[in-house]
Picture 1 (tube, one colour):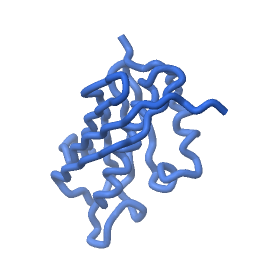
Picture 2 (cartoon, one colour):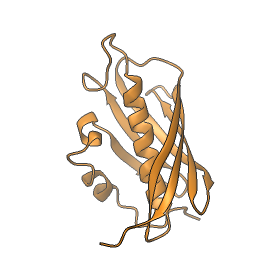
Picture 3 (cartoon, helix red, strand yellow):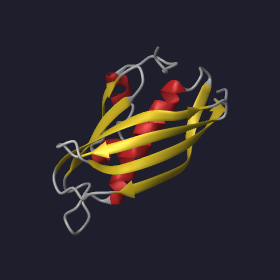
Picture 4 (tube, one colour):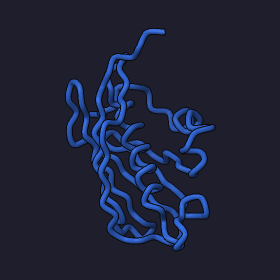
Length: 142
């Protein structure tokens, strides 16, 4: 059974990121299954720090993007999710290629959700683990 409560359309999700940080960093949502959301980030001049390594902030931007998109897809109709807290442990440096991420729910409550986001290099080695907590709020009427 799918945990998503909204239509899942990869093209529409990625199109909504035009003109945002996600587009600037090259973050892309790549796949959505019934229980997880996946995405990627290039390791290039946009995402490296001066020593040639993937910037930790770029890893966190990918993780928060994956968790935020997932939490909004899993939120009940008429509700939106907004990030409250994120933590990241950077385990291994990356110099090139793509970072691949996967967001899975740890807790889906009435007013909060907690997401586990694992980031890997292209060889499948875990490079960063993150936990994102979001609050759910009723969408303001227009």
